Length: 141
Length: 113
Image (cartoon, rainbow over all chains, first blue to last red; front, side, top):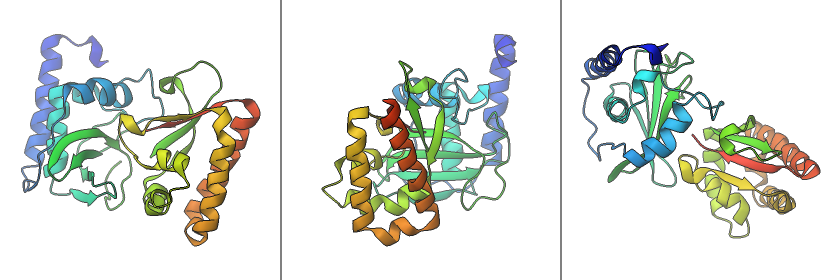
């Protein structure tokens, strides 16, 4: 398992994952507030729900290499800037982004991701997680 | 998708197992209907967010009948919206879970992504 790898190997895997996302999505940059994963939302929401397999067992889980704050930050930018990105303004003015990422990012084999930000002017991430299906996207699993 | 679970003991929402999901489609299709009616405060508390920590919510057993009453009121006010197959299926199961929670004195948990 990933947790048994050395620190160097773990860091290497994180760098490789981030590089893969960056290369895959050198796509048009979203012309609105750029997403920001705060330490609080990562520690209090994203990690326990979408990384920790010991709790919230019905929730989709990221692969380990996406479960640091810096990797989570890269993930949200990758979704926000992906060429396949679907952007939807919700009734409460939050912005939902869904995108095919072309690589597996979740433990159930998910290849799509969803990011929710506060508004068009406030990129603070509310949540983000892997998706196995997503309306309008064909290749999520 | 928001998970709906019954909390029958002292477990936390992180330990709960979902018995039903409130999908994006059902949530968004009823958002205006629920949020636009001032007499549906319990449903509005559930509906006002779909994502993030603030979307988590627990309904105590003593509040469940009032929640069922609000669903009945919503059906009277917005019958056609609730008659759509996906929405109707959701509410059929949701009401059954509410009644089960009431019978077993369980709390009803809404757990966000």
